[in-house]
Image (cartoon, rainbow, N blue to C red):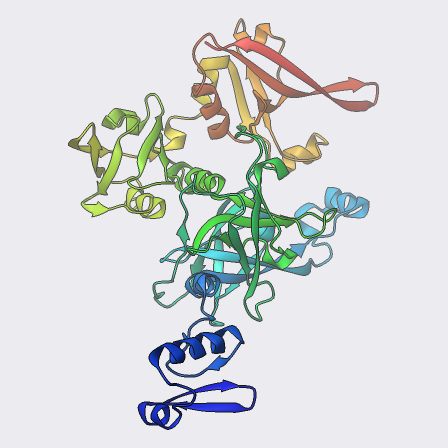
Length: 479
């Protein structure tokens, strides 16, 4: 028997009650009419007449699917005090001067698990300068996490959960296709801002990114997705998802000047950042020399650097990666871990598909410093350079240890003809920072012989008893 209730009238619905209530239910048609009227008047319908899961709509299902992968991130930052007296005491007492103890500050943010092994995606500004990072999972479990790498230009960073005990497989989020965005579609901003529980806000996708990608330019409002879903400061680093439960962006900011306007990094830019971070070069100092496009499956080889191990192995742009050492690589993180498993001590077997044919190749990674070194820089420019240590920076009265100092200039070389002299400090090459030998050598290697290169310099000049630092630049053709 089921019960239909309107106000204070209760009707019993069963075969027996219907026979007794012929005055109300004289025919099947009348019964149908009565039931329709009950629905239209807002009747409360109990078991048998309503879907008991009507509240579990697409929004709730998407949240239930994704929320276990959303984490709270707590960071501790040690702040060292430095002022005129610190510099004076350091100059006289050097390493024997301890100075005042550092102070700690704490900050909160959100993140999202993107791989079952414990890799977490968040904003770079959430963990920037952190000395310790702790993550709190959806169920309250706490873990320490180590920063893997980050890109301030895109505000994307990767963490990895660490523990002395073996880690369980974690629930990770699914990424939406890079071009699968619909203006006006319902989106959800998820986070765990204070470690006290989950946070969900709902809105629509108000705008896509408004300009094409610009290489080496930091992302800004024009590059972000816009939504009216509330994104609070503690939600930075959490996912922006669609109603299927797929991540379409990474929450990044709220526009203070506009009420109810939030922004997220598009999933395409997130994929680009992960692909740039998860490389043997960035994480292990091993040279592979091929860009892997990680935004789709199977993984596809992008650019291949000349003379690189990838080029020597026979990899070509467009090759689809099927297996590494016999194991499938269904994620850019899986690819990276299997590629660097031997730390470059053993060759890696790659199965790729090219124009419908299956091809097996072997690639041997090598330390970057074996190829990208001072010798390559000297051969291309005629300059002998070295890094700037903190001690050398203090000796030269430099504000930082960024850049490379010119230790020698080959007579008659392109750099010497352009006016570069010993003691000059190289800050940038073609507008890109150059703070170590490998980075500088890689930038030069990417340019062809005879191509013009511009280097930004700091030049020291002695004026009486004063030493001045002036900015300059020099341009010349590479050998």
